[in-house]
Length: 450
Image (cartoon, rainbow, N blue to C red; front, side, top):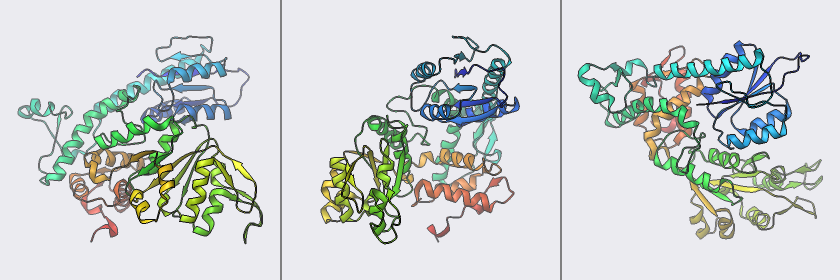
């Protein structure tokens, strides 16, 4: 990785603390730099992409902006070019210290270079000691095992514990060990421009069905084409919608989500289209609807299959004309939004039974993206477990997981999909109390099974 640094020209008279903005989709890179710069008495902010970094910089000017060599939403080269154009006083610094413009050459620049160098050294050390499985699931390699097991992708010195007899769990554990070696490549891979087959940072795992989701997102993200996301509950449909917005040209505008199943039918129309004062009982003042709030951005209609037929007709008129009429108002308002809808229901079948308007369906389903059930990409289970445990470790002591727990998770049918997995792991972490390792005893599926 070759991150680049853009230090702002420092004002000697400036008394406020030095502030650095780290721009990277890689949370581990941001975390390492944050820790090092904080130790050097910098205040650190973070952005996961170029658009977010730009917004933060316009709001509050930092003294330094550290930009990773790959951004998930913008070309790093184009970002730096436009950034330099908008902030002509900014100097561009590469990781090796090459200065490509006028800028600070004092201790602040040296601190930034030191932090970058230390973060890279820390990354190298982390990869050399990385273990996704706790040590009780791994046994040292003997000389007789070494060559054959290393060729299977296991890290040097370790092999999966073959005492786990559950065939399904055994496959998962083998995949988990392969994931260890893959993690060593993940950091470098994240710095490369992702092609049509690459995984987006919102998603975890390398199963073909998940890579297909990323591929389809990239194909349609930059267009204004309406997208319908279909998939079972808990399979990540909102993540797909957020990725579509992030990669679109509308990413500087609002992303507005509304769950059509969570709002009573009597209020849903006013929530979507807005209303005037006195339009109905309790409307003591006018209100702008969610569609208008999303003007210029993306409107995400979750559980669109739950929308009443009467409201479907009004939504269809808006989709066709781009104009809406607030409840109680005679005037129309022109709004430009990109509509992304999601459902766990087979809407194409509902159009035949009359519970969903066919004309609205074909307007919304111009481009289809289907999110798979967790049971369809169970090979990603080890990566998902590691991901959720790492997430929980930001708010509580980091937990590990043993072979008995992984075997129990692997044998579960996962009717609630990835969301259920997240909740099961969170419940297990709570049940474990002060224990650092999750076992099968803490894996509780609640009412999902008897």
